[in-house]
Length: 97
Image 1 (cartoon, helix red, strand yellow):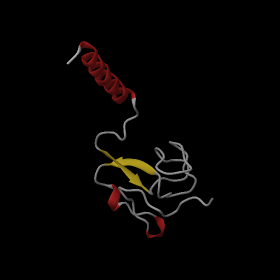
Image 2 (cartoon, helix red, strand yellow):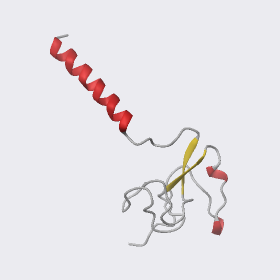
Image 3 (cartoon, rainbow, N blue to C red):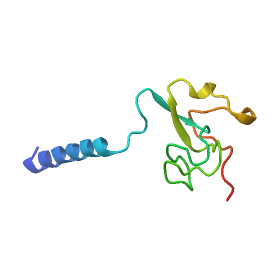
C-alpha cells in the first residue's frame, strides 16, 4: 500500500467520523420515532415530501411525520378517530396538495 493510498484511507475515515459526530441524531437513546402522532406544527422532523424538518407538519396526526416517544410506547398509543401510532411512515392524514 502506498503512502498516498494510506493517507487517503485515513483521511476518509476521519471525514466519516466527523460527519457522524456532527450529524443530527436519528433519535435519542431510549426513544422511538412514532409516526402519525404529532399535532400540527409539533413534529420532531420530516419524513416525507413537502416538509423540511421539526415543526413543519401541516395537519394533526400527519402519517409521514414523527414524534419521539419513549421506546416501546408507539404502537400502543391511541389517538382520536381510532388512529394508532406506527414505527413506520403512514399514508393517512397527509396534507392536501
